[in-house]
Length: 107
DNA sequence: GGATTGACTTACG
DNA sequence: GCGTAAGCCAATC
Figure (cartoon, chains in turn purple, brown, yellow):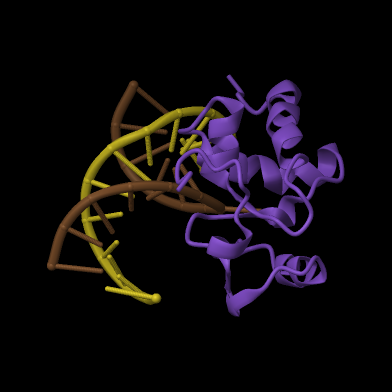
């Protein structure tokens, strides 16, 4: 039944852990790298639970618009602490900080 | 087993 | 660039 097994969660988080300092990645990007491009929503759910499975940089994960998580208020402060710049209160400079391994928008 | 919801993404106006 | 709609999948009611 549950797809959100520890094995799957750690698999996703392993890619999250590969996001370099000062960079950010999208849910879909992580999902694609993990081999499940359609599981972007599951990635978000996993990240919300990631703190219970280990300390992962879940604050480096944003949506493709560069907007931070609506329910994760510390994210902005954490990203600023890493040198990530914001366009406004809820959007980072995704074009500047997005992870280089982007396969969807490799351009 | 159908309907609703969500840390998503893409398309359209 | 922003709001809405449709597509997507798993969990929850």
